[in-house]
Amino acid sequence: DQQVKQNSPSLSVQEGRISILNCDYTNSMFDYFLWYKKYPAEGPTFLISISSIKDKNEDGRFTVFLNKSAKHLSLHIVPSQPGDSAVYFCAASGEEGSNYKLTFGKGTLLTVNP
Amino acid sequence: NAGVTQTPKFRILKIGQSMTLQCTQDMNHNYMYWYRQDPGMGLKLIYYSVGAGITDKGEVPNGYNVSRSTTEDFPLRLELAAPSQTSVYFCASTSKGLLQFFGPGTRLTVL
Image (cartoon, rainbow over all chains, first blue to last red; front, side, top):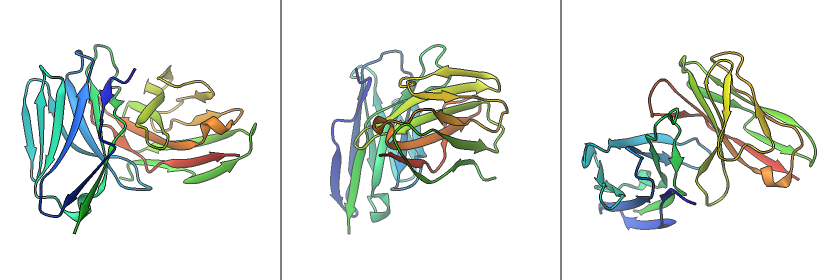
């Protein structure tokens, strides 16, 4: 049973346009969400996070939106750049006593075309 | 700081062989994790540790063992390699928080 779902395996956008990556979760105990970016042959690197007490968090070109009632979050990248081409993982945590364990989605491969 | 380092980068094993994947972090993090990533799948937690001497199973522990004798090191042991263990393995660590730092991964093939 997948608790964190990224239903789009891939997304292709033009350079300069907006990229929107989506993530849904089923566990209502999750209260902290992270996005990781992964290039081929490298480990995931942290991109941006959001706590459930917020509905938006911005960091430069990256914005994460959280809709708790819909159990949905999205990552917006504006403007998209070719260097953003990577796999993006959504992760969630926050269950009591979780020892900071993260539950990951399957990832979305973003390709930004020049 | 080197962060989280993993060795080897690549390894090919024959069915039934054993090996240890090494993971070291120099950030004095108490929490360490082992994940595997299969093609088209997310990261699945194998084992984790909340401090030296303390380990616990994650989502997919079968076929693996771990130990944590020091804060820095968290090796993952495969005793009898099987083709189903062909995967990319990532080690991660964190201090008391949710931001995990990942190593570069070990790509393992079992033939």
